[in-house]
Length: 92
Image (cartoon, rainbow, N blue to C red; front, side, top):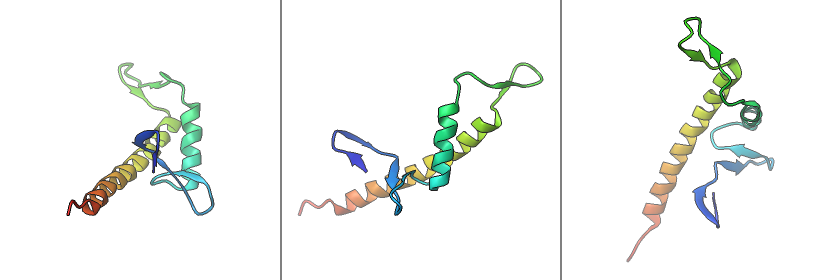
């Protein structure tokens, strides 16, 4: 899952149906995450009643929930990939 011109792994894979899906998410969740991410307006938050704190709106909370799910799966995938590379590396 790396590009020949970039060593950073891509966070997507192509599923059995040929759809580009974020690691750890379903195709539907990937679509939802990308939609929410594209709608995000920087700095747009809801002020708490005390005026000091800010709360993310429902869309931002859901986007963060999906991102955390993806991030956890991606980290696990990266750790597994590193282990597999080390096990396959043999100088003898």
